[in-house]
Image 1 (tube, one colour):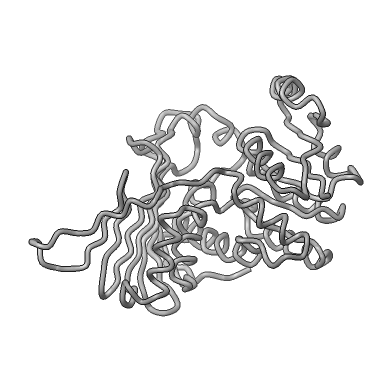
Image 2 (cartoon, rainbow, N blue to C red):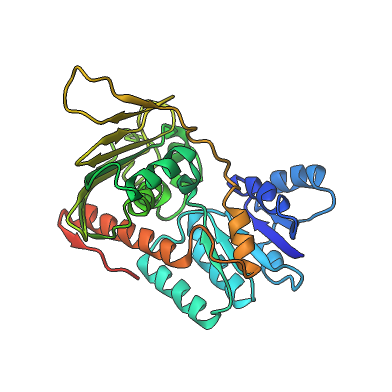
Length: 332
């Protein structure tokens, strides 16, 4: 029976169900810096240890796995401390905020090769996108030549009023766009080798938020296919994952409630409506495969290498937006 501790009771609270759903795992400890959240957690989970101190979770010899769902600028230190304390780590995206931190985490994993790490890149669990991946693999779309992913956050107040605007650095590409970057590489099986990007802060102008709230990037993949990705936190629309996949035989456009599949260039031909569930997943759904991996039953749905691949593209996009230049992706 594995015992899990969770640091951060925002999205981290949704991890509880993911661990508890596994018959060989249970959550024994929760942590949040907010005393109000700790008081609420003590009422809801009276049998668990509740603490405002992350170190109490990390140092507990009875805990086998730690979920890191704290503020983004805390991830690196907590991940490394947990690994060096012998804990497996499930981390909310992003893994960290800087390439130097990613290298430090890589070294901690090298010191502890028996430990597993995974991240909540949850779009891989969307039934609609799972079906699309199968279709691409079967050749039903033809050869893929262009892909687009738009992370439309639609929650401007989260960056202008919440913790994202109070930490020393926040990246909308790392905090949101990374979902689309991972999705595009997962769907195509093709790594990104070069990027260009631009950003602005028009939507959050006049607020306390100090960073770009919109970043758009162009991607060049190893095979030669092209791509576009955007992290749009200020958009006036509900949260949505825009996805377009262009193949030589068909074009897939995600929509709500249905996606559309075009199999003809003739405007008289009706496209196919795709009604497979979207998003159709919960934020703790990837944890089961992670627990199985810890128990020696294969690899997690998102491996450590998957995490480093996605975040390496994010770092290249950050540099490209900062320097207004084309940047090769350095995989960490």
